Image (cartoon, rainbow, N blue to C red; front, side):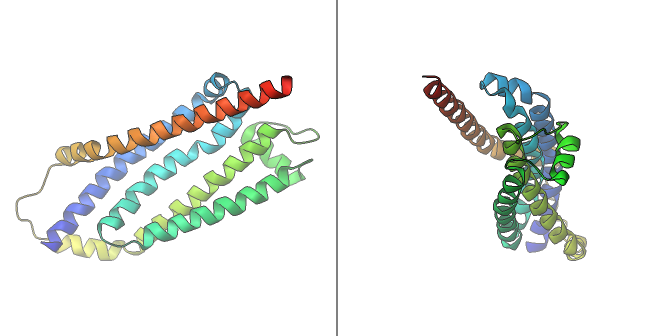
Length: 219
């Protein structure tokens, strides 16, 4: 019944959240740790800063997916729709602001932030790799804002959720955490592989276009 389904859905949410926390943390750590290797393999050594700047999005997107999936399962699309809207609005707006602030000689506040976040001391005109890193930092900031909205959305409804869970009826058909984890993995792995393939294609396209432009200018 509805009460039992609600209890099970929240159990699935908690398991998925723990799994995605781990996956997101590992993904972010890997990208940050091997950013120079990835950048050098793509023949763009200066791009490692941009990769580091975008790395936090892996963690926050993973965690946000658990919250969005939970509320979608409850047929409440407000969390997903508003969080995605916020993410796109702030991503576009902050990207424009950060790029404008880094064109030419950066203001002192941007120079200070660049030194403490990227361990780079700007001198004169801002190099393209720093501008790209700040553009990616805008995307990371937007995902943090989107996640913050989802977290507040959940916490504001936590009391109601707890009441529904408390009133749930145990019909003896509950699945173990191990069974639920297995089902989540079976459903998420194909989707994750598709996303990884898409990301790899983008990297290949980026590397191919960049090399083509470099060759064109050399000739």
